Amino acid sequence: MKKFGFIFIIFFFAFSSKAQQANCTFLPPQFTIHFGAGNIRDVNSDELYSYRRVSYSCPSDGYYSFASYTSECFNDDWHTLYEDHTAGDVNGNMLLVNAGRAGAVFLKMPVPGLKSNTIYELGLWLMNLCKPTKKCGSLLLPELNIRLETSEGNVVANIVTGVLPRLEDPKWTQHRATFTTPPATSTLMMVMSDKNPSGCGNDFALDDITFRECVKQITQVAPKQIPATKQSNALKQPVTSKPPPKKVITPPKKEQAAVVIKPKTDTIAKTNSVVKQDQKIFTATPLVLKTRENALIRRIETEASEIKIELYDNGEIDGDTISIYHNNELIRSHMRLSHKPITVSIGVNPDQPHHEIVMVAENLGSIPPNTSVMIITTPTNRYEVLISSSEQKNAKVVFDLKK
Image 1 (tube, rainbow, N blue to C red):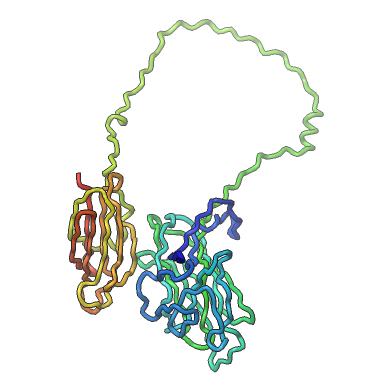
Image 2: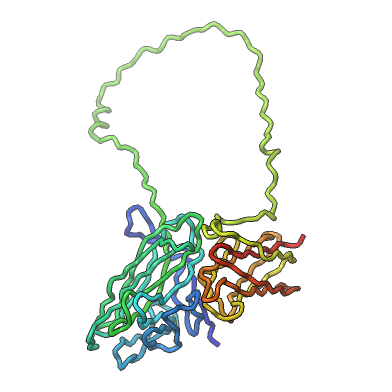
């Protein structure tokens, strides 16, 4: 049985490579998104409005797929690809997109694990799948917009590819942008859209999205060298002898009592208490948690264990979407509530005894307010909590280790 992967994250600890930016060295990719192999789970964080996923390698207008090859698609109007861009992977996937509505988002996924206030390079590989031999009444070409956004929707990085031309032979091209992560931010949302609508020539492949950290180079100033001519002249100068200095005799001083300096008492060390392990540890509070009321819905005390949290839409599926924060850190973004659960797991233990889960309404669906059912499963209990959130009020559930 094949092992399926979602996103393969490859960490490198080897040598760094030179960057094109002055005084900057880009490390090998901190991680690479290359869409795994086989029948992977969809990378999109929630359901897209204008695109749908299919399982075959020749998606039609408004559809996308994760496939390892293409073969004579649309009467051989596409290039036939025998492998994806990633070197060395067997049956590795690439993302194949057949354009739909103009400006519609075809990929939206969170990018966790980035360092805050750090320079990175975002890179990705693209290819126009259409052959130039295809006759078109009105030629349309892919023209993509790739953005990295904060949870508040602020754009951190933006790549506008320009049109991807049709070529005689299939060719991957890389597109890159350098950006700086905001302070106290470790997760960004990656959003990709196609400026042009579906039509002749607007089909493309995407693979190997990389994030490389930039390390500034430290320039060392070499000590000033004395020119050789000056050194030689200095050696040629005659050395004149000087009379020895006269001895100056000073009368002896009276002996004074030795002064003993006693060390000051370290009052700081005595007054500072030891940091206990049950302190609450949070990242900086995101704006959406500062500007809205965070209503406490339920507080649960539990033994040390792994806790499973599942969120469903409550009642009719009406398009409610939410974001989820764990101890002020975004862990799920713009997720659509449905009959399928949005699942989160947390570990309550002596090292991490306190957890706050906050549900933020991104929209209210067609039937306000944004409502959901949270099913909480511990090794000994099962809880069912009704959640209601709006554009003014978030919903908070707190977990504490039972003492």
